Image 1 (tube, rainbow, N blue to C red):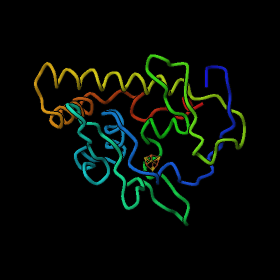
Image 2 (tube, rainbow, N blue to C red):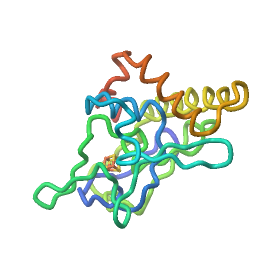
Image 3 (cartoon, rainbow, N blue to C red):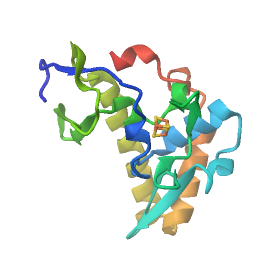
Image 4 (spheres, protein in one colour):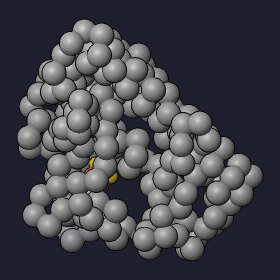
Length: 185
Ligand code: SF4
């Protein structure tokens, strides 16, 4: 989809996007928002809620899947799936069912037709402002990770830990504490 185009999307509360495997990549900003919201030091999330996948020289943080791939943050209330960190859910979750195309093609997104909400409800535009915030956080995350690995000589997991420590330490910017829902458009 390009800017100006609309698609019908309305969440059906199926929970399908939260039960199909630990495939949501995070940034240090996502991790720090979640830790702050839960009132814990980010390391307490490690292993139980978030994991790191080492791919070559980078460690990529991701949501942990439990059982057949249900997100560790997904709970059920009266059999209805509920995100237990909804106000600070990762930006990839907030963007869903829109999928970023590329940082260099910011006026384009894909729509995941696996989502049962696609084709239902009102026509909406993708959340372009939120997409910009996502790309900006990705850029900061990977620029610093690159420096830590290639210029400062950290091992992949140590580099990721240092990056998350740095971001959580600097993380008192009110805009980023919990991103306003209105950027979801
Ligand atoms: S963090 Fe919340 S919205 Fe994202 S996959 Fe987990 S339960 Fe779903």
